[in-house]
Amino acid sequence: MKLKIVLITGATSGIGKATALLLAQNGHKLILCGRRKSRLDDLSEEIRKSYSTAVHTLNMDLRNKDEVFAAIDSLPDAFKPIDVLINNAGLASGLSTVDEGVLDDWEKMIDTNLKGLLYMSRAVLPLMPKNGDGHIINLGSIAGKEAYINGNVYCATKAAVDNLTRGMRIDLAKFPIRVSAIHPGAVETEFSIVRFKGDEERAKKVYDGFENLLANDCAEAIWFILNRPNHVNINELTIMPTAQPNATTILRK
Image (cartoon, rainbow, N blue to C red):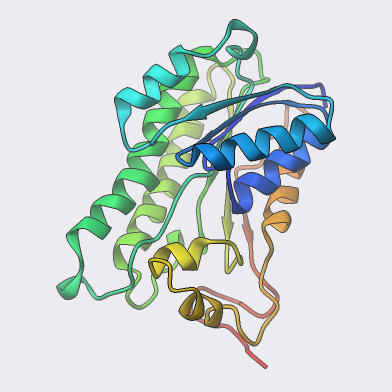
C-alpha cells in the first residue's frame, strides 16, 4: 500500500485514535479532526514523537457546516490531496423511549452522526483523487442493522449511515472512489460514557461479564479494508464480539 493522506474525524478517542496510531505506525500522513483541542494536540505530539510521519490537526465541531468547510479550506497545500476519509465521529446521547425522548439528545445524534458525516464528505470529495486511490470509510454500527430497545433515534441515524454508504458507493463508482463501511457491535470506548452523560459506573456495566471488542479490533478492520488492491472494494464489514451474536443478545458469564 502506497503512503497516503488520511483524514480521520473523531480522532481523539476510541476507534478514531486507535486508527490514527495504526496508520501513523505505517507511515501515512494524517489529518486529525476533533472538538477537544487539548486531546488533538496530545495525540499529534505522541505521533510526531513516536513515528516519522506528518500530522495536521483540525479543531472543529462537525455539526457546524461552516466550521467544516472553513477547516478543509484552511488545509496547507501539502495536505489537500486527501486520499482517504474515515468518517469515524459519532455518538449516542441518552437511552429512552420515543415518547420520553429528549429533543436535544435527538438533535445531537442526528447532527453528529448523519449531518456531520455529510458535511465532511461533501467538503473533502473535491480534493480526492479520481484514479481509484480515493476511499471513504464510514463508521456504522450493528444498531444500523437491528434496532434495540430505547435505541430508536441512535439506531435510525446509524441505519441512515448504512444506506447513505450504499448510495455513496453507487454515486462515486464512476470516478472511481471506493466506499466502505464497518458496523461494530459492542466496543468498549468512551461511547457509553457519552451516552450516559459522564456516568462512568453505569457505562462500565454495559461491558460487564463478556469480552467486548476493543477500539484496535476496529482499527485493524479499517487497515484491512484500506490494504485491498484498487480493483477490490469491501462494501461493508460487520464485526461482533463472539459473545454478541446480534444487537440485542449478549452472553454474559
